[in-house]
Image 1 (cartoon, helix red, strand yellow):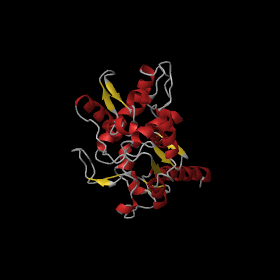
Image 2 (tube, rainbow, N blue to C red):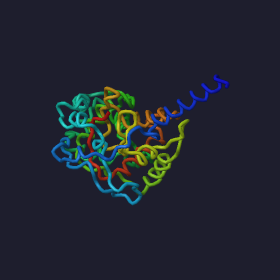
Image 3 (cartoon, rainbow, N blue to C red):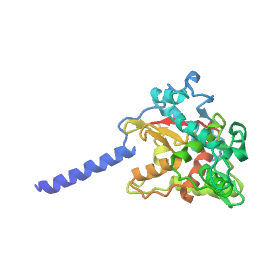
Image 4 (cartoon, rainbow, N blue to C red):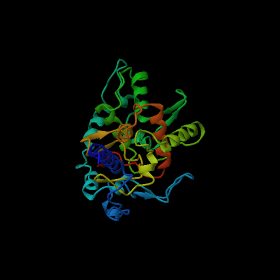
Length: 294
């Protein structure tokens, strides 16, 4: 027997199985949907439900579940208490930046928008949103940088910088508890369709799409965590894995890297379209940011 060839084939088989297990295609444990997150008395502040019926005709789900539903109780408890939620460190920074004068125009966000609790209420639930001047949809990050450049004459913030994460989280907090309700028709329809196509397209060395994990295998273990339905209502989110707050596009990039695909850039048309599709797909779920996830 050619033991060298045999060992080579065995190593290849082992590696293939490890990749499939890590990708969630082969699951060590197939768990049913949990019961521990259903009690209303365990929901985070301003959230009345983590389960809603789909409001879109093209939904593949009978029920939409927030990512909160799939987390362990210890993780849920971190999000439940605003004092314990580590994401509020960024919220506090965002509140400071709201009134901070920056740029050559000598303005702050508050100079134009005044009290964020009033003027930003509902904004986070409708983003990304079509911008008539730009002739394209803008994410919240892109909208902030447009304001900084055009109105404040200030430098742009980098996508994953602490100031940007702080401001996006502070603004989305003003919509906490409100249902996600982005525009899906008119000029946004083409972007929804583009995002949907990306969602179902297999990419990378593992030949996987978003749907393979978050539609076909949600509720099952992937490594030591449970796969969610992949909704975006909790972003920006504090991930225990990251030990900091992160954007939705960082999560997109991480998923693509995990399946050995070349990731798109944060703020790319591809990721913007995917963000739009997820918001469309998750209409009705309540904004939770800053959520806490594994």
